[in-house]
Amino acid sequence: MAVAASTELECVNIMLAAIGEAPINKLTGLLPVDARTAQSTLLEVNRSVQSEGWSFNMEFNVVLTRDSITQQITISNNVLKIDTNVYDHPTTDIIQRGLKLYDRKNNTFLLDGDVTCHITYFRDFVELPEPARYYMTIKAARLFVDRLIGDDGLRTYTAQDEARARAILMETDLSNADHNVLTGDPNLNNPINTFTPADVLNR
View: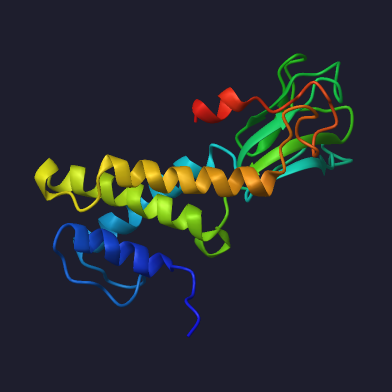
């Protein structure tokens, strides 16, 4: 029998089990307080981890089209980070401000054309690879126990468990990203943007 990837419900129930609470059978409707807290904690950790940028939620050289009437670019609400390359846009300094792109160099939302950028998206839980789901679950469970109980002796998962889960995620991500220490990230146009192993250690 094939084993399916973990679901958000299963992860919430793992968190509830960590404080000795009974599992729930749904994530919608009226939920016990602890279940709602577990669900919100998992979402908090999910956002935090995805904000780091991984192979599963980063898109490179995305062209965002400027509105021909407003001369502005509006971005979707699932965008966590946007990075533009100075070599692609040498006369501007474009950043995300709210749900629009802003030219910080010229102090305006009015842009002179389309923008090519690298985007980190927030992915739904079902879109995440299993190593990411597992790491988020362990990290969220530890945070959940800390906030509700605060007793190290009652932790189901240790710091070592969390570190191992993160190591598995990072190994999987590096394999999927196809980084090369000599040529850098193949998705980037600028050859100066090379992959540095020390960056991984800083994560």
